[in-house]
Image: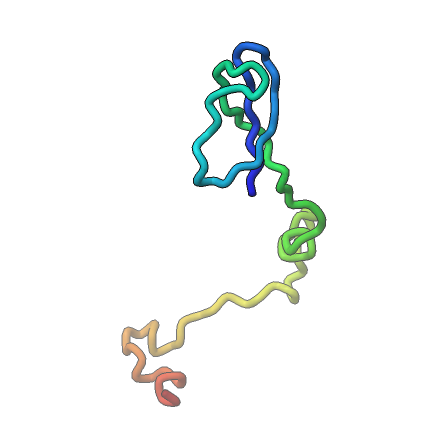
Length: 95
């Protein structure tokens, strides 16, 4: 269940309440019964650690890959460059 933070407008007390998301927000302070306002606070959920991004799926080191390690650019088949469509493509013949 989420934890919501409220602040009393009269006694300035800040308190937390566990509520369902479907529950109506509190309207009165449990101490003095004055009106309260719901606060927006930082979530307790944080992503930390290496994760997929820090484990090598990005190049954050600033180094450039050597030419041999770079994937080759995909070139269209010669028949496609000539405008012949898929008729001359080896992949079309196996389909």
